[in-house]
Amino acid sequence: MNLLLSLITSGISLGLSAGMLPGPLQTILIQNTLAHGWRYSIIGIFSPLVADIPVILLVMVVLSQFPPEMARLLQIGGGFFLLYMAWGGWKSWRAGESVSSSPADNPIERQSRRKYFARVVTINLLSPGPYIFWGTVNGPLLRQGLDDSVLSGLAFMLAFYGVFLGVLAGWVLVFERLRRVNPKVTRALVLVTVIVLALLGVSLIAQGAGLIT
Image 1 (tube, rainbow, N blue to C red):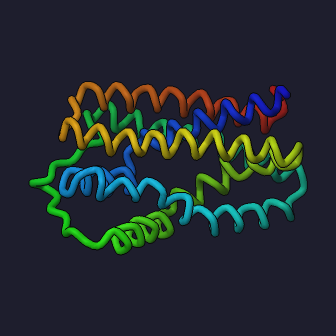
Image 2 (spheres, one colour):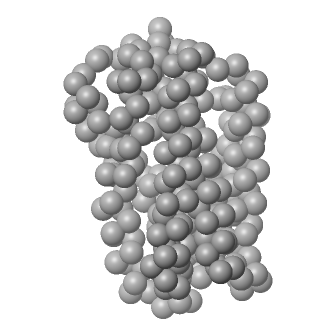
């Protein structure tokens, strides 16, 4: 039960961080929302459910060939990767950057919803982030959950994607309603994400080193 709760907590925290930090997926969702409205762009939030399938399968096959010691090393590597992401988010926060966009600065051609969705999926597949994220962070956690039980692995996936897609939908609805979020709000959200990532990174390193369970 402790492992199940730990996996759910990690999934929620990682889903929040993945959704909040500025990236290619968030940018294209916001740009299309500003240009064409939420009804057009909302379908893009589901693109990770398609793009992540080959990434997850690849990671799971590779991880299944590793001894438990290698999984611990990957967990430690994932912790350092999260700290690296936190450092990047901290620099963005210090520089005053936020998740925002302007339709005047980013004219977006309106495509059919099918082409738009395919474009977002392609962007996800060609971005290195999902491969690194699943290879070093989510993959080992999912493997740990599946080794315990199918329920634990499923709970982690539902927690992660439930929060991740929820945050993406939140961005779409916020920019539809406000068209431009107050920069102070987005800067504060980025700072919260940085803190969450740093705490998760330290936790993964401690787990991989056997300091905590």
